[in-house]
Image 1 (cartoon, one colour):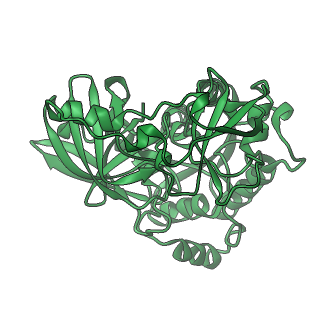
Image 2 (tube, rainbow, N blue to C red):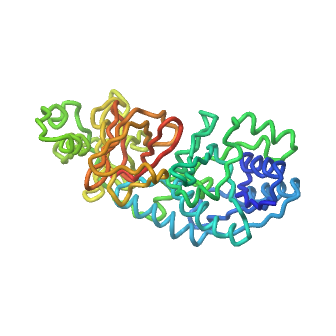
Image 3 (tube, rainbow, N blue to C red):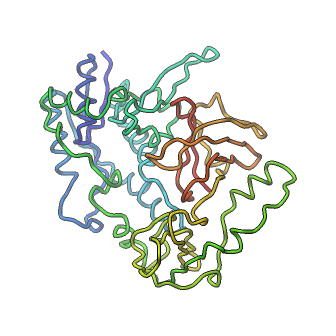
Length: 395
């Protein structure tokens, strides 16, 4: 009998995951990961992890499976939280959920599971895994979940072949309503429970408040860049080769204070991210203001009016060699090679047609259509026919 350790989070998805595996004849063990208990940085008295671990325990009892809580908060703080603060302080926008999967759920947690003699680790992610023999070797594929509205493959874009071998995603073939229906029939306490929002670890904490507890406030100015800014309307030069052209279009606009007019003040450029609209607290403009760039060195925020402002859009992004990750190692591009893909730069964004161009120093992702708010530190993931092939950190 194969043994599976399920990450029980106290939500309906992981509850049904455990239930289905048990029905399929696996020996199932439930583990709840406690990732966060630094009370100095919470902003509500609700303690979601206590409530969640309790729900997870009740589900495990109902299913008749062993259950325990594992405290991973030390690794979590070091690998995720410290990294986040570091990225924000550099003016980049990290994606803690993707890191949580790579560093915690499928690394630290997987190690614990394997020590418990597990053959597999299962999570309640909406994605699918397939195996194919290519050139005599087993290759594992990560596919989008069947439920288009819930597909979570993007969050797993940093997994490796070694991690996928051991991973199971039992609800990937189901839609959310079907999952709730199964939970109801199995009489699981989590059947009607609302989905948790927010970072995969802090539960109820809102990001700006969270950041303010660690990154010192520092007053600076908000500068509004007009739509007829010289850089936007300058002619596109002749390029000697494709790489020069890609580099030109991937380079971000650079702004100086004198390029626009001062609209107000902010409490720290490192609290803001490109594409952000809320929290600027500046009135009196015809259209809504969007952050088009933050300069953490000079502590300046640059904004533009309206969501179609030129400063928000780019067609090409770059990923440096150290940050390129292929799930399908058999498809790695060599310098000079290209690949037609569909890509996304954030969760829940529809896939967009793009071309990958591998160059000596890294990888350019050139989209067919302009993308709004491409943000350094975020992940770009590329797909072909529902399969996630690889990903990288936008530089």
